[in-house]
Amino acid sequence: MLLISDALSSRGSQRERDRERAAARAGGKGKNGDDGLTPEQRRERDGKALQEKAAKKAAQAAGASSGGAAGGKGAAAKK
Image (cartoon, rainbow, N blue to C red; front, side):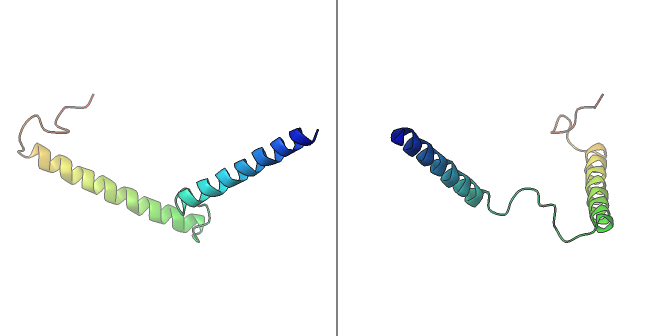
């Protein structure tokens, strides 16, 4: 009985150490639901980022279609 108890406790402590190490490796990355913004502020921020991304993509598409070298990255027509 004593051996089984020791094995379980050491296995449990190993899991705990692994969790601590994983948390340390993760650091501050990952999703954080508490970023200090209200849902409305978050929507505004995300909408602005999407608009900027769309504008950048449109500018790249306009630059590529206005007279770039044929066959480059992204030059294939989308279906």
